[in-house]
Length: 112
Image 1 (tube, rainbow, N blue to C red):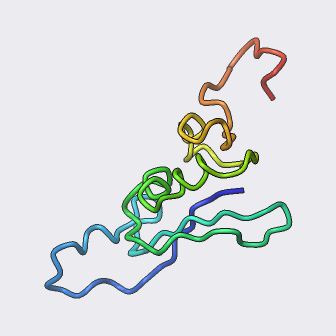
Image 2: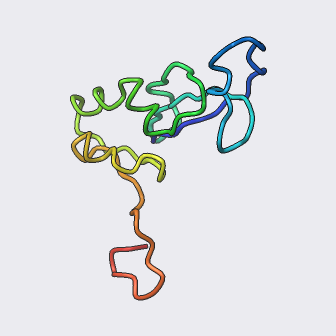
């Protein structure tokens, strides 16, 4: 499984130019973000370095080199949330995300 987590931090120093990068759009607070990959038992297999929380989960995974690791690694299936849609194509189908489209009526048999 793969997911990003935000860790709340103190506000950056007053004169710092990049202080707005730490403000999370989701929680409206100063935070840093880290992406974590775990196995089915919950053991941590990989953890990215903490970066300012302003970027999206998929962007953070790309910048930290996770896409290169997964594309060249063993053929495993990694479950991810909707924040990682599109990563499956870049990793050769190793990352599985929920379908992008939501069916309001007459959903096909494969959609749950």
